[in-house]
Length: 226
Image 1 (cartoon, rainbow, N blue to C red):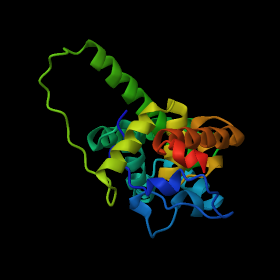
Image 2 (spheres, one colour):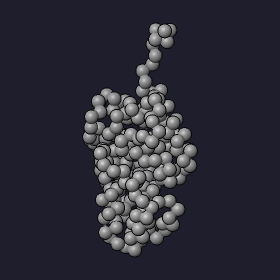
Image 3 (cartoon, one colour):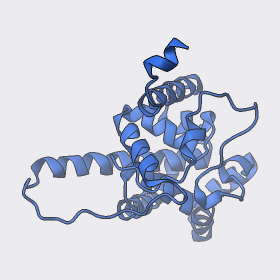
């Protein structure tokens, strides 16, 4: 699983020191210094956007893309590992939203429903890619893509984090990316991954615990003796 392009101060995100109540790490670079769309969207605006999309108003889809397109691409890139597949996943998501809008029942917010479609689309793309790798010629001369590096991240630290993330279970990795990288709340993640809010919190706790075990240097015997 590729996680290239992660833009996060990784040590702060897996620190065992609890954050002050009510504080959050910054979301992905697309929204650094800006507002958090999933947080500031009022229920009335969410419902109005859903109703406009259901009526076939193309301007509503344009607004949805303007509000969330960049963030959706960043999330898809973190799940799929490269910007090309991420772009395809976002485009496919908007097609699915357009085709399935009549089935939206409002049991979750329209935005949460849209991100759930995106995540499932990414899962489908990931499974398809794995199947293609299984049948591909091992002697393929295809040149691997070079992904952009995370801004401000030391290459060694970034690579260590990517290797550690790859060793997590898919569930732990996805919750970690959604919460710590993309800045979603547990209630939103629960709606996207179709689990309980408590399960989301427990999964994040376990993911960060496992990352600390993999990333923190082992204690020397001399240090333990002190």
